[in-house]
Image 1 (tube, rainbow, N blue to C red):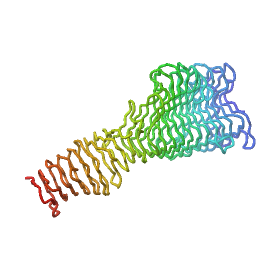
Image 2: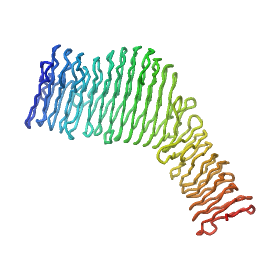
Image 3: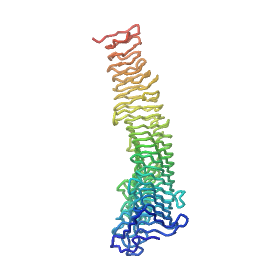
Image 4: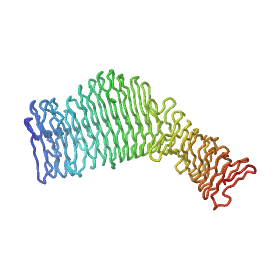
Length: 630
C-alpha cells in the first residue's frame, strides 16, 4: 500500500507530498489489483494521529486498482490522539480511476479536543473522475470528522459505480452511520456545475446512532447535471435507543439553481427520529430543494416521528422535514407527509412537514398530508403552492387514527389540479386543528368536493389577488369571496362553480369563450363581470347589490338574475336580460348593446353612448316604464 503522513507525532501538521510531471501514476493494474490500502494520513498508535496531504494535480492520469483494499483520506483506525491538521488528496488533472472496496474521508475515533475540527478533503480533477467502489463514505462514516468532496475547477466529471465498474455502488454516505460521541461530524458532496453519473443502492445524508451526544451531524449533497439513480435515500436519520440531545441535519440540492439533471429514486425518507430513550430531546431536520430537470420518486416519506416513550419536553420539533420545489418536473407515486407514531408525552412533541411548490410541474398520484397513530402524536403539515402546478391523482387528505393533525393547504399563485378528486374527506377536513384552507390566488381546477361540502372562501392573495376557478368542478359548500377577484374560466371552454352558493363581497368575473350557464345563486356586495368572448347565462335568483359589467361577449340574464342596484355597464359587448333592478342605472358605452325583454320593466335611468349601432338599446316588452337619464 501507500502511506502519506504515517506515524507522525500529533504535534506536527503532517506530511505534504506533491507529484508533478505530465505523466501517469498507476497503483496496480486493471487485471491485477493490489488488495492493499492507500492511506493519506495514518497513525495506528494511541498517541499518534497523523495528517497527510497528497497532491497529484501535476499529473495527467491517476489509476488505482486496490481490489479488496481501500482509499483512506484521514485516519479512521486510530483510537487515540487527536489530529492537528486535515488530510487531503488532490487528483490528477485529466483522468482519474479508482477501484476500491471503500473510499473514506474521516478522522480518528477518539475523544480528543480537536476531533471533528478538521475537514478531510478529496479534490476532483478537471477531467474524468471515476470511482468504482462498494462504499463512498464522506465524513463521520466511522469517526467524528468532517469530510468533503469538491471540484478543483469549473471543469470535470464524476462517476460512481460498484467495484466491478458496472453495477450499483452499495453505499454513498455523507455524515452518516456515526457512532462516535464527540464533536460535530459533517459530510459534503458538491457536484453542481459538473456532469455526474451516479448509480447507488443507498444514498444517506446525516445520520447518527451515538448515545449521549449533544451536537448535530450535518450532511449536504448537491447535484444538478447528469444522472442520479438511487434505490433508497435517507435524509437525516436520528436513531438510537439511548440517544439524548444530539441531532441530524441533512440538505439535498437537486438542480436547486436550475439544471438538466435526471434523478430516479425508489424510496425516499426525510427527517426520521426514532430514539426511544425516555430522556431523548433532539431533532431530525431534512431539507430537499428541487429546481429543475426531472425527478422521479416511487415512495416519498416527508417526516417520520417514532420517538418511543418518555415525558421529556422537546425544545424544538423532533422532526422538521421540508421539500422545496421551484422548477423542473417532479413525479411521485406515493407521498406521505408527517408520519407520526410517537408516544412521547412531553410538550413540543409535534413533528412538522412542509411541501412548498413555487415552480415547475409536480405530479403526485397519492398525497397524504399526515398520518398519526398514537394519542400523544401531533403532526403539523403545510402544503403551500405559490407557483408551478401540482396535479393529484387521488383525494388530498390525511389519516388520523389517534393524536392530532394541524393541516394547512395554501394556494397563493400557481395551479392546483385535483384531477377530479376531493380536498378533504367526509370525516377529515383540510385546514384542521390550528391549520387553515387558504385559497388566495392562482388557479384551482377539477375539484370534486371541498371538505365534504363545508363552506370555504377566497381570501387576500398576492400579486393581482386573483383566484381562477378552471376545469370541471362539483363542490357544493357556500363559497365566500372575501377579497380580490374570483375568475371563472381562463378564456377557454372550462370553468365551473359546482353547485355552490356564492357570497360575493369583492369581485366575481366570468371568462369563458363558449356558451355557459350558471345557476348558482350570487349574493353579497361585490361586483359581477362578464369578460369572456362567449355567451354567459345567469339563471339563479341572485341578490347581490354590486355593479354589473359586460365587457366582452354576451351576458344573458334570466328574470331576477341581475340583482345589482349599483348600475349595469355594457362596454363593447351585449346584454340580453329579462329585467333588472329598477334602482339600477343602465349604461351603454361605445358599441355596447342591450335588449330588455320582460313585461312590466321599470328602468330608473338609461345612458346610451353608442352612436354607432342602430337599435343599440331595445325594449321588446309591450308594457313598462322607461325613464331616460337627463
